[in-house]
Image (spheres, rainbow, N blue to C red):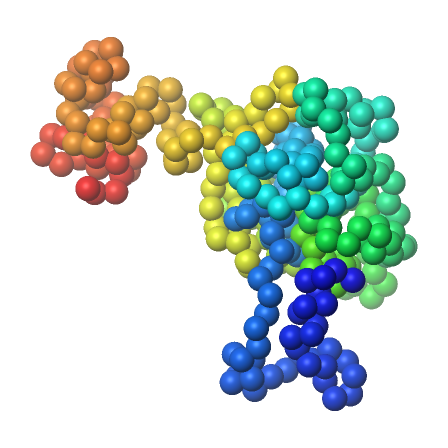
Length: 327
């Protein structure tokens, strides 16, 4: 049992019948001091089950391995986010030990591997003892900070007997893992795939029914961008604020890192991105100023600024342009 879980249980008196307390009078509930949730990566991966999804070959495994290596070593995640060091379990269920070793060599880029990171290419399905398998590691690694299961398909097992719909089967697939996360107060990242059909709502891209996203505490959708940014990570959940992060991928070392500036700017084409960055630094600029600074024609600067204003990427006022929020 984790230290945080012990603190939580000690703060909440048991029900008189001996089972965990689940009901309070409102004034009693407000008097309880619950510990803060455990964060693997502040603002992105919190205590509970986080579903990390994306198309094949987009870099989901590289991203989850990056996080595991950073947390085990206590180095900033994604190149800039401070994390608390602690044991990490990475279940690479689609890899062989040789392939996993090659991935680690690339990610480590010459640095030493941490003994706090456990790499395992085996785990039985959750309904067939997988939860006990992971729980055994958690019992041996007090203070663990993260568990990664790559991929969900390898541990979900057969649909439970009595599941009357695909939604119920999907919800149950996450449910067993969520019980494990809640019991040990541990963040668990489940790597999964997106459906082939695209959607404006990133949650609708999760492969399977809404039962998967509904049962998870958070959903992280990784998308490759065809514009300037290498990728965008959409994050939403019960304990995380809905946010988009622009990410850059370095294939030489298999590393994802946060990009500077707002994600909207990173998704622009090269010409628009240059103008957006300039106007962010010099709000109130006119096309002539922009053209001179960026060494582009006045006509191009004027037309691009107008289109960006029409698309809501800039704010026009009196012939000058500002970031998309009025100054």
